[in-house]
Amino acid sequence: MQQKYKKMTPKERVKAALEHRKTDITPYNIELTSAAMSAFTAKYNIKKEDFLAFAGNHIEKASYNGGEFVYPCFFKDEFGVVWNRSGGDDIGVVENYLLTKPELKDFKFPAINITNVERCTENLLTNGNDSFKLAKIGMLLFERAWSLRGMEELLMDFFVNEEFIEQLFATITDYNLTIINEVLKYPVDGFYFGDDYGQQNGLIMGVPLWQKYIKPQLARTFAPVKAKGLPVFLHSCGNIYDILDDLIEIGLDCYQTVQPEIYDLKLLKDNFGGRLTFYGAVSTQQFLPFAKPCEVKDKLKETIAILGKNGGYICAPTHQAPPDVPPENIMAMIETLNTN
Image 1 (cartoon, rainbow, N blue to C red):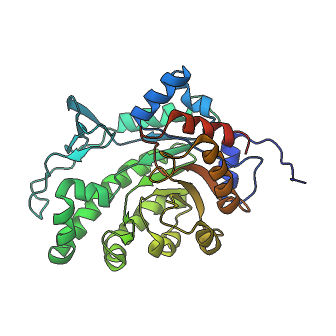
Image 2 (image 1 turned 120 degrees about the vertical axis):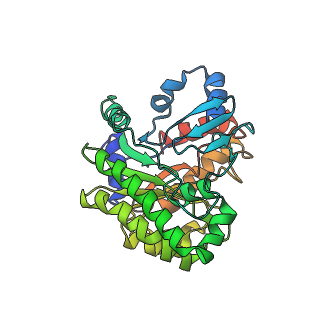
């Protein structure tokens, strides 16, 4: 006979997952790209602003990354990097790299709009939703560095311009810490950072270089959050198995993405489940675009049985669901997770 648990709020469920406690239902979060959101809300005749409540999502984020469209399909971020989004996605590709030389003397970091940071945080905390409220910085460190320098040039710099790499990563971290310390004046529930390190078969830059250049700056980044007693979430696509121990060592509480086409989920749970909460694991790459709704429901139950054993799991697509995921599959997730 299945054990019954007291009905919990979304915030209580996420807190319990981070503490590796069982919950009445598994906490979950379903996020969609703008194109997928348009298709879903049109099909089911709901307003986009009502999606969080309709889906029953457990997590909300206030993002401190900014920018504006300077031309249709061309988005300039707060660092001045222009992203060409004519391909139809929400990120795009960089039009031109701003750091054409391995030096910072002619590059000025953007001013931080503290008023905007305060407003975003206050809006998150006062919206009346009993969700788990995360402050978010995407393109945290490595991603910000390559968006300025270019991926190929940055990876070469790891070997031939070490002083520049150390200065660049430290300066980016100083910039982020200004935002983090401002946000931590407010009672947020935790911090979520996004920074992709992996490809399908391992780290982009390899473990030794990640440990030498990136790990120390991540430790600095996590430190004030941990000092406040708050959990740290990290998003990274790809296979980062070889640095999970390092991330746990410097304070990671929740690892988000967990691509099932990359990881053996049972092995991951067995080896790290007592020390990490997992968030994601429903593939947007090889499953959700192609499955039938009944298969989606079965896959969710299977994944929850593995990663949700003894708590420590937030069920979600591995990334914001792209437009090739049928709206019917998104609805199948919502229906299943509401009653899992």
